[in-house]
Every structure is written in C-alpha cells, then in structure tokens.
Image (cartoon, rainbow, N blue to C red):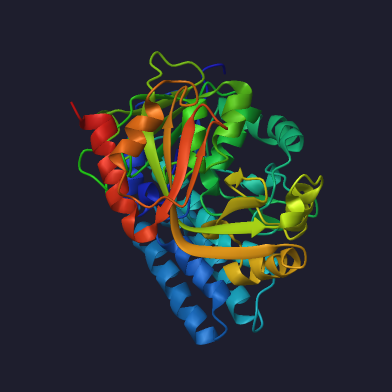
Length: 450
C-alpha cells in the first residue's frame, strides 16, 4: 500500500452530522485514504477538561449534559442509529460513572481517562456515518497500538513499539476496511489511558503515517492551509501553497495554530508529505509540506506567540568564570522548565519561557526555580510579552534582512532579539499590547510592499 493516505479530521471537521458528512465526501473522493484519525467533536474536549477541574458533582454533570447533547444530535440524524446506540450508551455511562465516583479531585491518570471520551465517541459516530455512505468503515481502538510512557497529560510515544503493534493489529485491517481511530490518546504498558497533550491528534496521525510508511498525511481543519500570518491579524494574510519541513516546523514551534509542533517529526523521519486543507472547502486548495520545495524565499511567514516571560539572570561571578551557564540551565532542567530563546552577555543571560506551555499554573512551576537561581545570581522577571518570529530561508546569511525588519520597527521597543542561531527564523520580543500591530506592519513590509 505504497499510496496509503492517513487523513486526520479536527474537531470542527467532526463537530456535527453535517460536518462529518462533508468529511465522508472527502474520503469517498480519494480511494487511497485508508486510515482516518479523528479529534473529539468541537467543544467536547473543553467540556471534558472542565469536568476534571470542577469539584462539585452538579457542575461536572452540567458539562456531561453538554457532551451528551452534542453526541445525541449526531445519532438523531443517522439513518441507522441502532447500529451504534449500544456502544455510545456504554461510553456515556462509563463517563457518568467517572463523574459520580471521581472523588473531590481527580488524579492525573483519571484526567486522561476522562479526556479520552471525546475521541472515543466521535470515532464511533464517524465510522457509522461512513458505513451509511456505503463504506466499509471500522472503528479501531488506538490504545491497542499507540504505546506511550506514563507521563499523563503529555505522554511520550514509544515509536518502535507503535510500529511493531501497528503491523500486528492495524495494518491487516486496512486491506478490506477504511479504519477510523482516535487521535490524542494512547496507553502505557499497563494499559492505562494516556493523552499526548492538546492538539495531539495531528501528532497521532503523523506517528501512524510513519508506522505504516504512508505516502501522505492529510490534516483537515477549518482553515484553507497555512497562512503567511494569522488571518485575524491582517486581511492581507495569504495561503502558502508549498512550504518545507524546516519552515513549517519553525512556524509550529513559534505559535502557528494549524499544526501541533511535534506533528512534523515523524513525517520528516520517513519523508512523508503533509497536506493541510479545509474540510469545509476541500476544493479551495491548501498547503503542501515537503522536504524539497521549488521556491525557498527569504520570508515565508510571521508567527506570533503571546504570554511569554523574559527572565534575566545576572552575576559578576560570571565574568571569566566557567560553569555559570551550566548551573543556570541545570537548575531549570531539574524543575522541568523548557527554555525557548537565549541571549548572553559577559555577565548576564536572558531567556524566554512560554507560559502557554506550562502544564500547571505558571507561578507554581517557575517560582521554585527562581528561588534557587536567586541563591547565586540576581534574577529579574518580565511578563506580558509576545514572541514574534519571522520564518524563512537563509535569514542568517542574507544581506539586508535585519535592516528590512528593524527599519520597519524602529519605533517599537524590542526586549530581546535572537538572530543567527537558525537560518530559518529571526525572533524578538515585544509588549503584548504592541504585538498585533507589529505583525501587521511587518507583514505589510515583507509580503505586500512594492
């Protein structure tokens, strides 16, 4: 099956019966789509997360009723609802049981179990939608093969195990069926349900594409491909027809919402092309992501990531001293804090943290590390910042590029600039309040001027 296509449909694409029907049209039009990965229907994951946060059972039950309503609205429009009614009822009862018997506070494993129900429900429903369109649709529990470690909430996939289990349990089914399975979720070696983190369905699809040696992984969402910047920031943003793995990885890392940052890693390992398109407008084109592209312009896109924190550590002891940087980063590592950008001078280090990437409250995660850093250096913290990344090619070696950017932004107060570490990005920090206007100005100068 050298032409095998793995198609992933996001939450908006399986939001309701009509949305699922549009996705069925896409599948019927492409016979090489054999494996389908679905997210939870739009809104369901948020309700499941809310259940895990509420202590009061009545509040949890209100969220449950919202999930039940979204699910039943699809069942009520099926031609043969009785084919899935028992399975859906079983899943809803299991979720209700967790709500009623979860105690005051849920543990990490319980949270992942609860959050798995969105994909488990949508996959059963979507498989039935396909069957009613004449497709041999089979719903498959991904937890049989998506093996992960036990880091609940952000589990790490075990690629070798996934590949072996995929060949054993999933691949034989693809010859005679179109298989529908769940994104975002997996299981550890004990069979406990795990999740890959929000947005992890894209990652799931890419991992399965890698394990099956797929030719293409399709990501169907609610936007027509990847844009030169967030279209909400400027009407002049336009769809990128083709982009390299390296550029797309930079965009995902620095804030582009269309792709989960880890999605491209499996695709790059196997050189699998990735297509991003809109399930609402499948004929409107989209973005192809590949190792080799025809055009590699200096400027490809501008990404924005808000809620950044700048930490500056300073110590005269750093002057001509070995080991200071090691001590700083060892402290951060032991507190499991991931650093994005770093700049250094003779006696200080400035680094950025992404508050959105913290699995718990920002202060609870970072304060212990800051306390330890303060025992051997001065520490200052600035919040309310945004990271803007200009993505492109050869940005570290092309003449005039920094001048183009900084002449455009001569009146903007930049708190940190990072240039030269990568040929694919130039990054800087600005105040959150200025960020949208800065992106708009830059986009006008780099993509539409002249």
